[in-house]
Image (cartoon, rainbow over all chains, first blue to last red; front, side, top):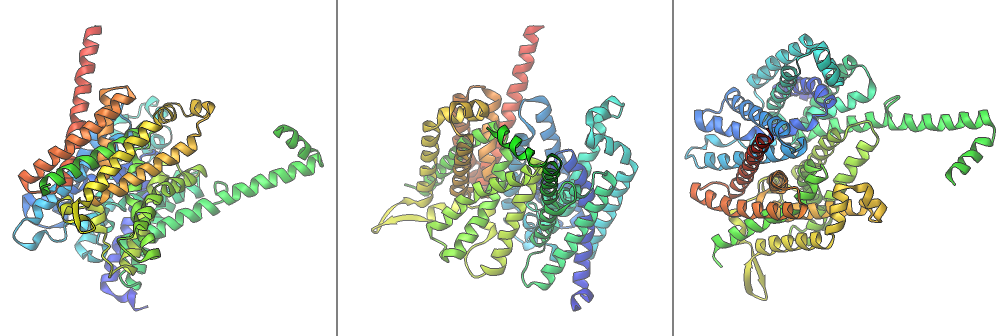
Length: 308
Length: 287
């Protein structure tokens, strides 16, 4: 197990752990609010911001590029919610339209950057596919600091977020400000997505956000338990994915993380008590058995008659 | 035929062909399905490649086209367990399949010329280099035939099943009563969308296929409520975006597909503004 002493691995694994954890926490709210795909949209829409930030400043500093990504991701999120509110176009269609045209703009800018004489633009395309193995200590620090702020936000607004995620109508009636809360939640989703795109890439970031939360949802009906579990699942997927890619030669980290978290979802959907598919089938069988026992052989006849 | 004319025709045909299934996807609240299909076709290509070990085999396209309905089926399977909502199911299934494809490519297809770059981004400018040559005669760019037949297939499919598609899109229950199977039509539509995505991604890249499918449809949806008009407007916007995108790209010397996608976005923005202005005027009359 020499991998665990390897400096690069420790940095990457730590980054993936933090990223997976915070994605799980923020993703829980996105999944409960049925805004899972917002992450997918925002991550695609971030591309023009990344490239524009590079073109304008000429520096390839992660913080600068991510600021650009944040700007264009937020613009896209606002455009989507404006369209949904003001026209009859639904969320899914507005999302698909805005994110793909933003991505188009991103590829246009990318070809502009590629025309620059020096090779500094190389690596910008890492934002499309993600490049976890190239993570630096400073990148991990950035992720940790931002995750800390996001966590603090979740703890501070815990009660508001809780009411708002489960019953927005009740929340509005109880006097919670709808617009600012919705905006803060979306903003937090956007920040999380932006943090992750450099590591796992535009395409796969949405899975990081959704999969741990969806898996955690199966195990508990309590929000606090779900959020903690989602953080655990996300963090574990991150570390396992990083480990798999460090051990398996040429195995890309982002896809490895997504496969691990996908397996977590599959296992949770199948085996979770109460909500899980297997436990529900067992329960149905038990109920039928109990009916047969209590009514003797009669219940079967009744069923047959009912079907006719 | 000159290379620039060929590219323009391919661009316009591809965008127009995408707009047709896009209209039905939009009406059926399945816009994001286009996003997931365009990503998972990569897995279809990879699996078919491992089966036949030949990059130019038509089985690659069949594998890719089959992946669309499979993706939709898997997503429905997951959301039907009622453990996961529909949007979350979409967001889990397609990145998973896409990841599997990326892993397979980087692990096992390293030597073959199969890379995620060309699938995700595509490059229209190189299309004229790929010629259709039969018995030594150069019959034009291959992409021209691909995009042209794609457009034709979609037009024929829509024309033949117009009534069925109309009923199923607006009232699936009525469709079932009238004897059309919504399930069969649903999966045929998914196959057509998948086929379109497969035909289009080589030219414009898989992410931007979503732009050409949904953006023209969403714009047309804002302009009219009549399905026939909506289809024509969407196709028109697709054609125009193709042509305008090409000329903008040549002018600025940037990515053609990217410019086309930007134009579809511009059209959508225009449609939103038009819609808002019109509504304001209408409400003004009422007052």
